[in-house]
Length: 599
Image 1 (tube, rainbow, N blue to C red):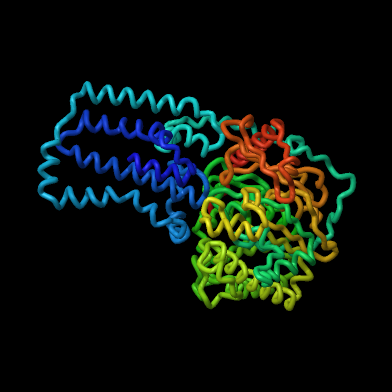
Image 2 (cartoon, helix red, strand yellow):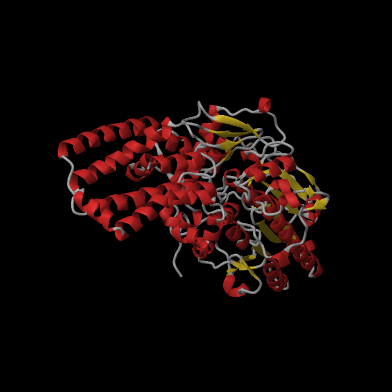
């Protein structure tokens, strides 16, 4: 148990101080062992083996969950066990072989206890209860140590800091036993004026670009795992994303744009973009909010005569998308049933198949008498990014071969190639020029905590500096349409801002639709972006800074956004408090919405 705790701490906390895992983890182990000694006799060794397996599984789950998500696992993750199974190839691609050493004793002991007669005799000899008094002393002492570690760390906002203070095992028990006392804000008191005040939004005197895309089709293209650093990146003279670079040059391009997703990743991006609400405090939006009558972009556009459809090559059951699409009000969805398994990569058909078949359907919609809203979700550039060789569209330098970063760049180069074909087809069908097109990355692709030393060196080469957290969650946004003057907009934005920006461009009123984002074309002075899940609770982004709390605001850290210096960082307690209020108002409002009627 000592060695297992050292392994988990080294991976998750990067902490190898010899006394800390001993103090944090072993008292909990003693606590359990004292109970076995006090009450078990005939099946004592079986009890030890079972507890050993359970505690080992907790340590291993904590390691793998951290490597994939960068956060602490807890029992709520069991709600997503079917989703984790579906992406098991992605999860286990992050496993270093030495992680499996955590199971060494289990394999050896299992073999010895069931195969070796001498060990069987030893097991029978020691199958007696320890004196209750001794077991009680150990139990009480261990319980007190555990309590003294849990109590002072209960209020810590940063879940990683909290788990390190309590110990991993104590943290897991604490999350199970603690009472969630969420007091919802009365939905009637949650108004747009209140939200705007928290975000410090003042209405623009004149609305720039208002209604310039009125009557146009609206096409959202959500690029899988696409991060900002890929834009205009060249590897030894080779352009990685020529299609995206060209679109950016012909569009309004927002390089200082950030993800607002959580555990649901791609499905969370779909939710945030289509509602302008924040993700829930835990879990995926599709699993906690999909039963509600959600105010949404498809419903807003439908009131103006639009038809709507969404396209994704995975099964619609993945992340409960079928229910989400009903709640959002999409007229129809196209999933694996439509796209089939032709040219399959990872969970579904390739991006080429996605775009080829989607283009046919968009032409049908375009030829009707109604404008359409379509959301197209790419997927081939999905973690772990090991696309088939027949999809390679560029040759990587030797130093990139066999690396996570290299695989990522190659998969994004293919995704960009497939996107280029799609854009060409939209132009040929007369759809491109008759549409407002929005492109953005759905979420990060290269988590800092998943990279090895070689990957970190490659990222340092790409950035010319260390690859940091604010880089990790930085994604691009592009807005293209007739009459929209191309250029680079430097203000801060997030996926939460896409709906109100589209509303302005299409000329539709949001007076009756609550939203937590802001129109990026008319609210340029400031932005406040609360972040969840991938960053500690209480994290937020303002114009210059990514703020992450420690135990509280007071011991938080300020991280400069790309292009900023440490001296330019600033994050006030008022911003911290307002960010938390925004998240709570969003959650309170959605949880009090009526449920949508089942079909």
